[in-house]
Amino acid sequence: MDNLTAKSFALRQDVLNMIYRAKTGHIGGDFSVLNIILTLYEKQMNTRPDNVSSPDRDRFILSKGHSVEALYAVLADQGFFPKSALETYSQFGSNYIGHPYNKINGIEMNSGSLGHGLSVGVGMALAGRMDKKDYRTYVVMGDGELAEGSVWEGAMAGGHYKLDNLCAVVDRNRLQISGCTEDVMSHENLAKRWESFGWNVIDVEKGWDIPSLNAAFEEAKQCKGKPSVIIAHTIKGYGVSFMENQAVWHHKVPTDEEYQLAMEELKAKEAAANE
Amino acid sequence: MNNIPNRQAICDVLLEEAKTDRDIVVLCSDSRGSASMTPFSVAYPEQFVEVGIAEQSLVSISAGLARCGKKPYCASPACFLSTRSMEQGKVDAAYSNTNVKLIGVSGGISYGALGMTHHSAQDIATMSSIPNMRVYLPSDRHQTRKLIQALLKDEKPAYIRVGRNPVEDVYEEENTPFEMDKATWIKEGTDVAIIACGEMVKPAKDAACLLEKDGISASVLDMYCVKPMDEASVVKAAEKARLVVTAEEHTFIGGMGSRVAQIVSEHCPRKVICMALPDAPTIPGKSQEVFAYYGLSGEGIAKKVKENL
Image 1: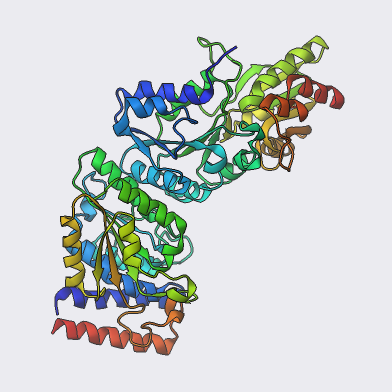
Image 2 (image 1 turned 180 degrees about the horizontal axis):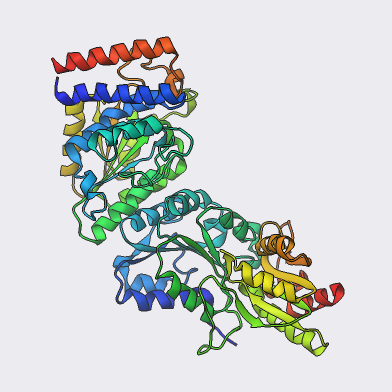
């Protein structure tokens, strides 16, 4: 175990507190995507609070914008804004709303409507190429999101322009609000679909494992002549056993008892990871 | 008769400015020909992005470029840009406040007999309803030039609609009055205020000439800035007149005339007649035939004024 794993369980406590306090949020997807975001900010991207306007910063887009609580927890931990700001989450007049809002330091683009982020990322990657910059662009999508046709418009453009400075991530937790992704709208042969659009596909079997995720991002960097997509096989609700792989936790708010149970489990896992 | 369509005037300005501004980027959705952007794609291939027939990613890609300091002009038929990619305009351009200029070409009923799929008689309504989205319908090539030159100086999103065909000049090349976000006063009068935008400005001007022969004094306002609308000029024109008539190449629902009626009714109540297209697929035909059918001509506007004064 490493410190980042411990941190990932600590940040899940921040997410839990946000959602429990506000009585709203998308906890299941937050917990499946959090380690992906954490790995990017800790190990991969050069983006820091002191360079948010630098033309050389790496770009991050949370296309599955409803997992914003996980992004808030990571950005606060990275120092983009004080952790106390998380207490205003979803409160009247707060900028810390239920989807990314670029009035908040460190957030590049507004999102929330699914299927926009990949094409926005294509634009950022094209700009980087035009300006001969070395920055990389990361776009994180949900698997349910892949039913949006606009995702595939972006995939087409990324493949056509061979944007090797673009890396997409699919948070493949196999659940969406109505149930299993494969029942709602199947993504059979997902890797082949991306390959056929001209993408380098990297599967991460343990999509919650930070060293595995980091290795995948390193592999993506080495791939030249085509964009990369990391299909991270994740677990919705990861970290809290009674939330894991349950579609109901897409946006269920924990009861008082559930909150206590979840917090105890996350604290125990944080402590175990620190040992 | 002028043979330069407004869309070509846009390309001409961008070609001139791109000589010194490497951040100007033109994007098309298999629309470089219809948008008159082929010369740009040839002269500046590294500042031109083709996305294929994919208007949604056209706008999102533009927003990504803009967020990285580029000045994207994405040019696509207005019918698709204003409805198919309306959400990308709403979220990625307007809400994220990126410097994306949406150029809706062949707007209104330019495509004539191609039918309602290719008409954009709703674009003022859709795009104006988006917070932080500005909407411009320039009337002739000279005003179009001035508008694009002004838009190149700001960093906010905007939607610009131009028609497919060349339109008669409203202004003289060396004497085109233009102030950003201020209506152009073509004529001041006391009986009726005619407020028009886009290709309806020339018929409005013609109507005023016809009315003058009959002793009717008309103001003519070129409201190229549909949003933000120049409210002060609307009120000033309405206050001087007994009747307000608006003319636009758009359905009467949610267009320029609707906004004028709101302003007039609030600040200086007068009868307002909105001359526009019907809430139905328009009759097939060439633009001028269709305009004449719906009374959107100099004669038609003058007749409507006389019937209502």
